[in-house]
Amino acid sequence: MSFAIIQTGGKQYKVKAGEIIKVEKFGNNKPNSTVEFKEILAYGDDKNIEVGLPTVQGAKVEAEFLKNSKNRTVLIFKKRRRKNSRRKNGHRQQYALIRVKKIMSKDGKVLSEAGKIDKINKEKKTETGKNK
Image (cartoon, rainbow, N blue to C red; front, top):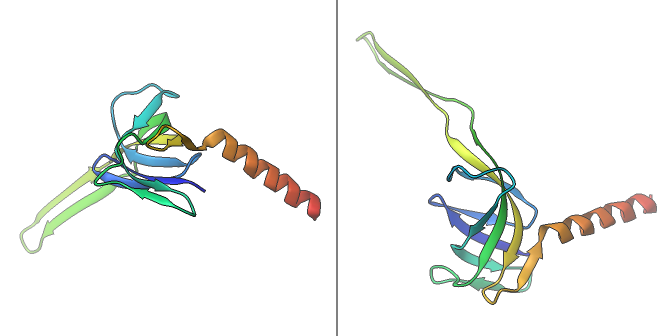
């Protein structure tokens, strides 16, 4: 199973093809539009791995933008005792949902693709269902 480590929004994520992840909100993209991540720190599979210094030049991850949304409310409550001083505040962090489609190596070769993985998983499920 191929994976890649991408950097976006000041954070690093380990992603696989077909996976849906939450990342920091970026731009006002339209749903089902394509997003490319070019800051790839490393990629590989079970047998070998390619690590960049600090990034792998030419490697990229293609993803499908699903939606922008907000997380649940986090309450911030500050109280100073014996002074009748209180402050209550709330915060909802914005995020973007994306589905990883392709992981491409530095020479442009497709390491893994979401459509192929979905088909393989469905075939495995039907085979295990027949054996029972």
